Image (tube, rainbow, N blue to C red; front, side):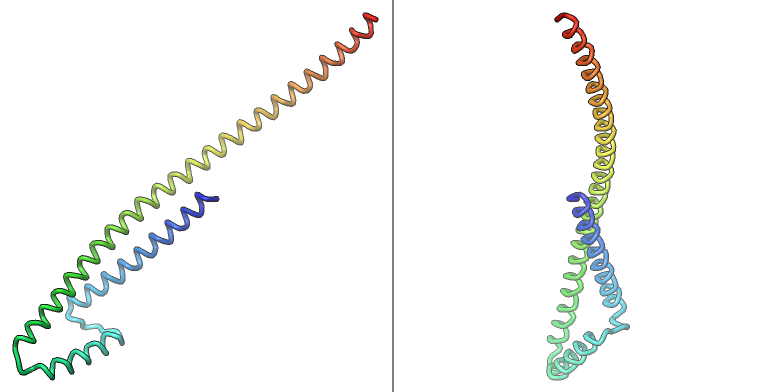
Length: 145
């Protein structure tokens, strides 16, 4: 029960890590392509950025800051991507360990089931021997009187 719940939780965590990784990978690709494909939210951000740039076109320094900000954003996204890759690898290792533990638990349960069956047969055999012994002993007690 606990092993299955842990296994399911690890699978969900691994799936979430994969989804997040793919999302970050797509975002990185979009940034590398210069944002050729934009989502609706990106379009709004681009419009706001254009308006802000129009206001500050008087100085070239502002343009350099924007490029620096984009480089910082890309660097931050690449760092986050690395972190997500590490988390995904850790989740994969945990998933493999959980699967191995589940297999070991199933094998152990099967062995215990076999052992229980053997012990029940042995108990029944001993009970039969005890009943036979009591019958024989009972007859000897009657003869001695």
